[in-house]
Length: 405
Image (cartoon, one colour):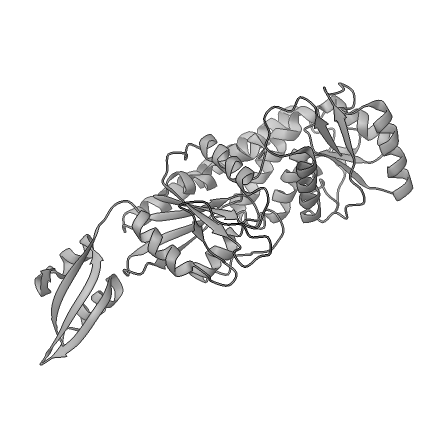
């Protein structure tokens, strides 16, 4: 159920596009979408959000199609939620609850599960009063996973105690992740983080570049838990590539806060690869929403490289100036992407070296193969004459074998 607000404040998404996205979210959560309804309004009804006549119409649809759940595209107040459930005699969710439910079903690591439960409880705490039996339901169905198992009689004090425990646990995770990040930084390898609207193809691109085997499918938020892998650039320079959760319009504030430990991988990155679904008509709008989330987590100042993905898909539109045209599915444009990452990454400059390495010095040869891009190699007597390109740090370790060109 969507509402077309006649005084909509500057949202680039139309009401129809927003409702279409809600349907995709619902399908990703495992729902069979029976019908979509829209009502144009100037202001929200305090009792139902929508008009009473529309509520009666929905109630008829619920009875006629034996509908289990009605999902609203707008956030519902506790009073609206309670009134709608009584009137419709079905479970009622809003957009935020649906997204939280999807996150609950996708989280695989202990860290992700803690973050999702924290976000769910923070959202549900003010909605405990008057929810009837909805809070005590167990079992399957959209909106019943995670802390939905909490019984109605669970008082606010116990929930706040659980919230405090979750926050401490997540702070511990944050500390562990910070330690891991410091250990990585001591190596020193720069981190490049993938960001983008959900379902833009980030995980497919990540798998193509790293061979990591991260889950990648058409469902929204298929990837929640961050994954970091080493990749080698054309110059043989090693960097870390991080895959993160996809962003979405109106990403619940509770989720942004709960996933702070995960999103710090983005804030600490030297370069962001902003992956865009180039076959989507709403590509520009999706990019704008990603920028909004980056501002919320303090990463708006990080250098970005726009990657216009899905070049093999029908409906692909021309990439804007400065963006790279790629297909994560087929590998089109990935060589150019790696070259561009090399150029865009701040820090060490590349130098050319002419090296003379004895054939017997296997350790030095191995170092060249690992840390440099060999441009030419020739065996002269008992030495290899090599011209190679490498970072300044690698050059310092090999400088006694030759001279910079």
